[in-house]
Image (cartoon, rainbow, N blue to C red; front, side):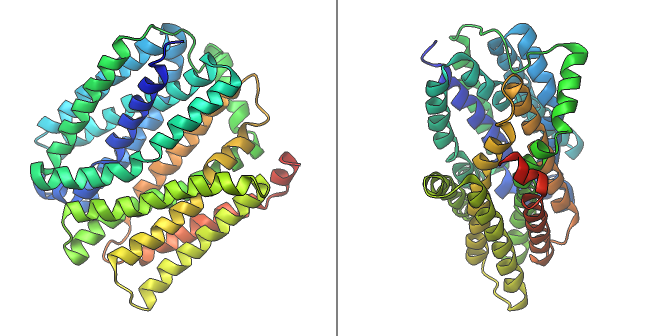
Amino acid sequence: MHILLPFAITLCITLTTFASDILLPSIYKVSEYFSINSSIAQWSISIFFIGQLSGALFWGTLSDKYGSNKTLLASLLIVFLATVTCIIATTIHLFLMGRYLQGFGAIASPVIGWAMIQHYYPKEKAALIMSIIGGVLSIAPMLAPALGGYIDKFYNWRGCLYFILFLNIVVILNLIVLPNYKDGIVTNKGKNILKTYKSILLDKAFTSNILMFGILASGEWCFLTVIPVYFKQKYNIPSIQIGYLLSISASFYISGTFITSYLLKKISIDSVIKIGVILCVIASLILICFHFININSPLYTSLIFGFYLMSAALLWGTTATRALQNYTVNKSTASAARVLILIGCCAFGSFLGTIIEVTNTLEVSIFLLIFSLISLTLSRQDYMKENTA
């Protein structure tokens, strides 16, 4: 197996993360440039997820037919053209179309990349490689907003898109030197694959496990869609500082992944999940209390949101393990179904962020609490206990 494959996959998925997060600090400036309401500019986040949602199954099937390398190159070409479209856009409609195509192409990297690692390496080595890649990728959500804010300060928001363009070219050049691997994430054809997806999605234990984290991710992206605009309107914070504040929050998520590893050596998966959900409820309640006792601090808000992310991180790998443990033959297909559910949750949360009040943090904090309570309810269902018995 080619030694550059894990490195190439890491670059591909990093590109996806940066394309999603790097513009977060610049949302307000995007609205100013196109002379639109900030809620419309926030759609650039939601539309990216919608593009990912519509592309996940498409790229998996294409990979199975033409090979992983060729499919990834095709998806990266779409990301390249979409980014150019965003750069040259003179209307918000063209910009949003470019963001949709960015998401459509970018989703191929995680969908195909993770499956390639599982498919082409022995179980033990695959686990080691995925752990290393996961550790590297966990830093990307922290770096992207900070880098985006820094670039925006000196080169405006389009500079962020030029950076994505540059990273895209680097990834393409890396993939060109790799052989074209056969067999993608999909092992069934035509109607069979649709039946397989249907049976997986109708599995209550599988869907509920994925939704436990996915619903918390809805809250995360609802908050991330609202908070850059809120910080700008309420405190007139420059983009670079907004990027730093978002990076502080993201750093908590990284700590959550390490805490998860430690806790799993001491207690069961079920216990880790319950702790994570309960802590998310507590974090949401603290944010609500901030509003009523008039604690107006961007730093404190970012820290408590970071606490929410850290708590949600306890469910990332644990719920995936519980969901996939009963799938052996169709594990890759189940993994793709998981990606679809999670992207759908992120898109829904981002959409909510475009329609709720941004003059304060009360509404978004209430949504965080609602999502946390729904996740808590799912964790207590009888069929969930049976699945993990």
